[in-house]
Length: 161
Image 1 (cartoon, helix red, strand yellow):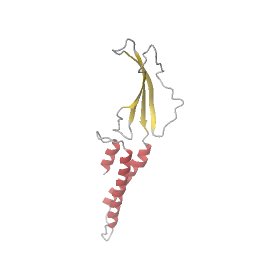
Image 2 (tube, one colour):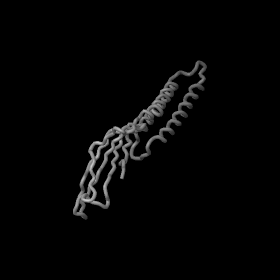
Image 3 (cartoon, one colour):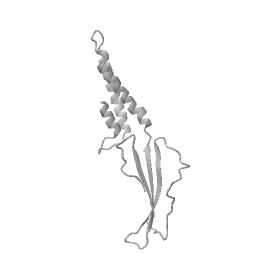
Image 4 (cartoon, one colour):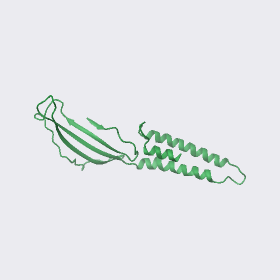
């Protein structure tokens, strides 16, 4: 049974997840099946992932005594802590939206041309608004969905608007 309990995406894309893997028997107690494992997992043959870094991977052994049975039951729980690599999101979402916001602010404060023709400013404003809308669509596709809080990247984009 492998679970990442209710992922904490509050600081997405700088989030860290804690996942657990539980290994036990439903039919055999400790006398018939006794699990043992080293507490530290050897990550020498680990192949790195492009999106996640493994921060820690530990295994804990527990013995539980249930009311139904005379003998204890052995349970192994593996704890995996992973952290997202934010470079993709920074390069493809955060930096472009920041640049578009700077262009928009610059266009807002630049004076109109000499003959009071404001078409350049209007075109720049519409173009930056369209670009920001497209980037917001990209961000909404990449962000994990939750209604409990706004992730960090969502707050960043809200402040840029």
